Length: 192
Image 1 (cartoon, rainbow, N blue to C red):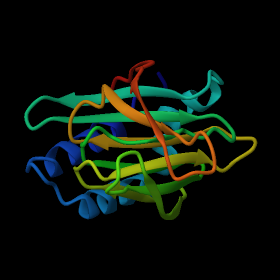
Image 2 (cartoon, rainbow, N blue to C red):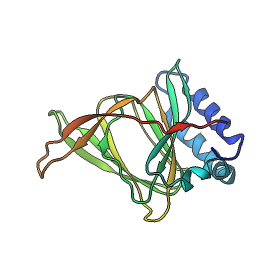
Image 3 (cartoon, rainbow, N blue to C red):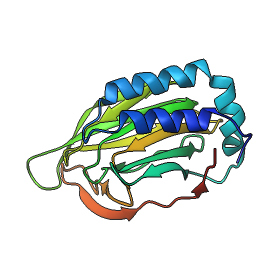
Image 4 (cartoon, rainbow, N blue to C red):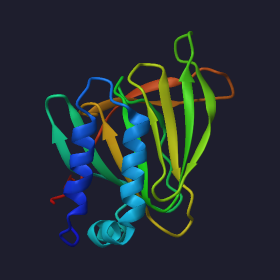
């Protein structure tokens, strides 16, 4: 999909090089990816911009994956105003960087009591901005495309295959949340 470009293999190489240890320096990875997305913005949009025009709803596209150490890199499309449910990442570490558009990320901490979540604040991401979370079972978040008109694109890196995760629903005003298993659906593979 999109015009052939060296930016896709360049992003893949940065991630694979920096994700060699079991617990990579996610701040450095976010900085380096953000720097590339800023410096080569036009090239990234030329390569991935067709995803913004598809208008098929929220989609996950596999950019690259590696088995040892386990890493997956995806591009996600966010329709105008789309918000995910509150969800976890099955204990994996992860990084999200905005390619085009703007996202709001609301973080949640899982409480000591089963099925309780506490808001940990919000972060707003524009093109080239990144946020990350460490491996573990205590993090969850909800992401939302801030535009009412434009599709956003984001780059996601996970320390493994995020095939299954938990999505959380709050049925009423109590602090109780219901966790429901979900499966990630991949729309397709992007080629470099």
